[in-house]
Length: 175
Ligand SMILES: CC(C)(COP(=O)(O)OP(=O)(O)OC[C@H]1O[C@@H](n2cnc3c(N)ncnc32)[C@H](O)[C@@H]1OP(=O)(O)O)[C@@H](O)C(=O)NCCC(=O)NCCS
Image (cartoon, rainbow, N blue to C red; front, side, top):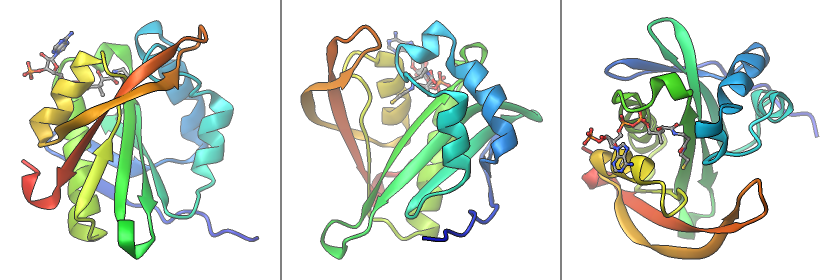
């Protein structure tokens, strides 16, 4: 099938800008992802993985996170398109030097706003490793609520299965 390249869009948050991922972002973002404090929570974001994302996929969106003119991370969404379940899921990482500065909260809020206001989703989900307290705190600040534990949900690079925490947010709950 001949797929269209993704159209380039830019979403402005309070401090970050989310810009459609392009192939030339892949090496910088893969470098950020290789840091142990990113890879332990978000494994396998290799240059090849990011290049494939930059080529685009139906019902998914991929963005470089830009802060003060620098690329500092990656965020993506996938849409559940069947009308009965119409909703979207998000995940992301920022490079280690950019953690704990409020940028992740701004990044998630900016994409969530786009998914709700522009793509008309009424419900979003996000599913960090259950002991990723920093991620959970950032998502709760945006309005996500804890749904429950998904047992042995994600495999660590060392082969260990980790529980995941499912959080969801209804459109009216976005802060
Ligand atoms: C998860 C991530 C996106 C969050 O972004 P961030 O910019 O670091 O987060 P923010 O600064 O916006 O918010 C973090 C909050 O967690 C708090 N926090 C930090 N470490 C914490 C911990 N160990 N336990 C509890 N809360 C913690 C911070 O104090 C802050 O809350 P506050 O504003 O109320 O003080 C980012 O840290 C990251 O990319 N981490 C590595 C990859 C990853 O975990 N990805 C998530 C996959 S689902």
